[in-house]
Length: 535
Image (cartoon, helix red, strand yellow):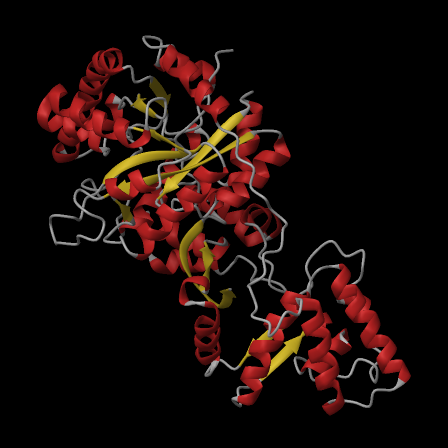
């Protein structure tokens, strides 16, 4: 079997563009006998940690990357019709420093450079290039667009620029092979057909030019497949996602479409060799890049905010001092209470969590002083130390609540002091912690909306141009969530007799449900979590 590693891939975190779910993707890579895989979603690292964990568990080397957008001018330039179409560039992290630089670039792109897309520029790439490998990109990359607009001379100039940014050995020419099917071309509009014929021309021109420039500039060639779904039969479902993203119908001829070239899937090394038999070294170079990569992300370590402590006291000394200073106002310090507090403090010290307790008690007490309603849920009610500090409102001795359910010496995971804040004053508390720790050290977290059964049916039905009434009737046959858990569509089809009847007897509804099953659970959008904050 030829050596090959996929270095350009899109998961469901390329929102409404990629269909690949990470567990299934890693499983497929394993089945195909490959020992490494990259993730390069559009402009984000949403799936990086899930991907890293899944690969490690499966014995696959994870290569974390991003298909970034490079502004034509500076990332801060946002002029209409000038800066709306940035170039694509494939970036891969070689090591942990490269991963940190990817985080930095993606953050700047989304926070400061966003204009239609999250963008960086060449100055930023130069500043944060350490530990990164760059591939020249897909047909929307600056290199290929330059070849098309100005010929091989312009392409050479662009390649030299990126070679200077990333350094010798860290910049590669990226080639793809995506031929369009004749049968598909006959079924679409003349305008789309002309565009795709042009893309085929650009692809041939790119191959011819890269063969010349690779020798001239000593820049190796790598083969990629830019996959957006896992298996070839998933092409139609991915086309549905594109329609949902762009607000189009499947029957619209003049729209963004990839289904006319249904090979954006996870190809085997043998299939890739067939596509690149003229340049077999392009496959070998993907394996060489994989060998260059060694990312170790330190997971499971607690990184607490730096809490300012008066004098030369340690966090534990200050926590102990605060506890005994405040406990007098909360309860009578009986021998039983004293023993319990000292026991809890000894566990907190042993587990090295004093900084966590100091941070939480600080904003909780600030909220109390400012008449902001707070409430603590869950096992934290078992801590007498938290009660003494004013974080909880329940005396665990009176109610005989064990501390060990919240924290004990053998618990491997972090304790969870689950604090609710009144929603009409929550922003005041957030502003307080921003002022205390710095605005650049406090952030909201992301949440993802996914297409569950009923929503998937409605989305698919809409883009298939089915009537709302018919689609709504089918969607309502899917059982509603029970205790927050959704019943999977494939189970609902088997277990709900009426739904099973429609599936068996109506070809259109069968198609609707088959496609909905494939896109079920796919991330539909990213948004700001209602309450989660990182300090």
